[in-house]
Image 1: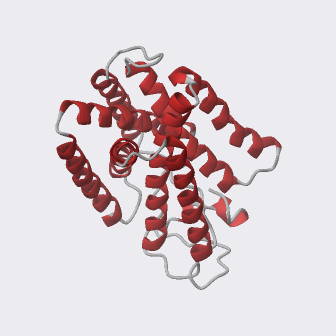
Image 2 (image 1 turned 120 degrees about the horizontal axis):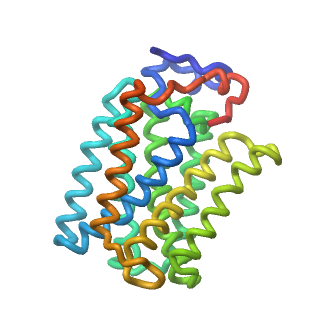
Length: 272
């Protein structure tokens, strides 16, 4: 299936489409799996770094991420297992990068959080300036896909350090952070429904918040520090991985996730 996105206004946006949409439909199940991958990435990264040589763990994470993204970029349409494998590896490696910035480079939580927020804004501004839309269901060219995965990686790193900021620097602990981010993630949905917030702004706002929310949940379950339940990073990583695989397997038996309905983009070009 090849897709033509209606309403293109610029030469870049009107360029020939190279492949079909390569992201899933945004459903409730999408958000559940997304939060599970963020949480698993947090604890599995911690497990690898604590149980193996940190340098080996970082190198292995980089290699696995490269393989996953290469597979994703080589597809010409959305493939469930390839897409979610890439998201999972971004979650794992994004956590490692955040930890490198904090613990090896020694950047304070506040400096890293603010710096990454600026990077996020710059990526979004550049993407919109080049393509005229930030809609995830307009990911039909190689350049838009590069913008998308750059944004995804940045959100994971940003989310990791912002979760650490609230838990440690602001002294909310993991449980307090869960409450904070659970409230925060409800705000875009409420603003979309009752305050007229645009679809694309609501999507990316919620997408960014899923990272610190999922990481705070699994940190609370696994950690022996602060208010953690001390279940261990290995066990929490295993359980969340099983949950992710089970949900993806169930989707596979149903024929995969539904194809994006691009008619909404025709009426809301800026929408997700």
